[in-house]
Image 1 (cartoon, rainbow, N blue to C red):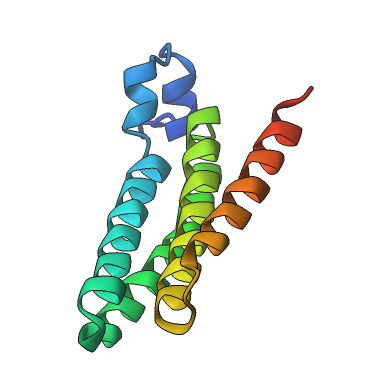
Image 2: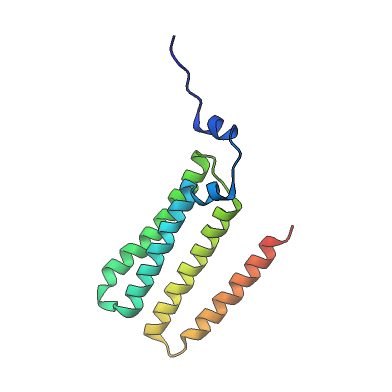
Length: 131
């Protein structure tokens, strides 16, 4: 008789999820990779501007990862509050970092860009956290 194997979702439904499990969800692993790509790209943009091609590739890879972490979250039914927060913070920090790197090159006041984005980030976080 052919065996019928349970789906991934059915298998996970029988197991209680711990906070440690959430840290290793596939979308969160993609999120960690996005953070690494973002940090490396920003370091290259600011400290080694002659390596701009590698910096752009890493930066774009971070945002392509944003597409795939959402797909993975839905496919594996691994949506989590932590993953959503990781995704939002990575998006905001990536954009803020890029603006700071660009303003470092093209203006005398990069701190104004950082203050502006920190303000918008705080307002967004506050309004999203209200029930």
